[in-house]
Length: 163
Image (cartoon, rainbow, N blue to C red; front, side, top):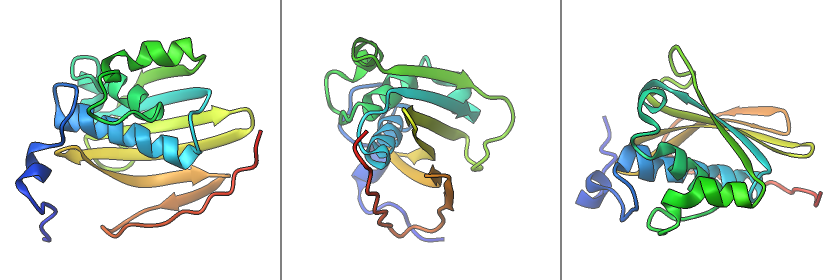
């Protein structure tokens, strides 16, 4: 087994607004990954929670954290707790669904984001692995499915046309 932690801050977690490095900071990171892969803020997002995310998302700040990440906020942005209201004011429809059954990406802290604007659709399946760190394990972009494995970074080149 390789050591994922390079410093004590990988265990403690990042500077953040919220109660939990896994359920808040990690959730912001999943939302930010969605924002980056979508190429900005989508108009509609359905967030599917599995495992402990499904059971505790309201109490641990996961909902506002995911919304904050989708909006492009950092974990220490003071707007993080108000992100759902900010999104609503900007006309962004974000819905949260508690799913039964096991995570399709085999992790208890799973969020799957279905994002769309017009005909543009992206799905990202991520999990919070602790200390604010995440793994993106599955993507669907332009109807192309990508399953990610391993610990190396990847580069995805997306050339979105302006809508």
